[in-house]
Image (cartoon, rainbow, N blue to C red):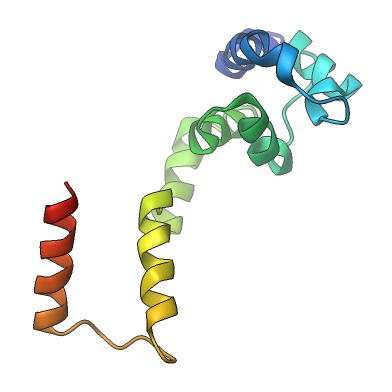
Length: 126
């Protein structure tokens, strides 16, 4: 089976056809290697996933998982996910940055009052 005959080949081809006219000249998406990836004769390098996801306007985590399937089986990918823990969403990262910027040094364990305040804030914005 050619590499492009799997999920990532279809995924990339569909997204690329939707955005091909807005991709900049110096973009990885206009490179010869990306053409070979789209043809199914090469794998998407894992270190290029974030750049490609940003250029195609797709979810980087979903694309990374598809790219991992080019190199590893599903059992190995599940093992990586278990070992690395739960992913942090962009929204959670924003909350974390706000907390860190508000702290004057190391962040202490949340008190009962802090937990109630965070729950109130999260529920108010939902």
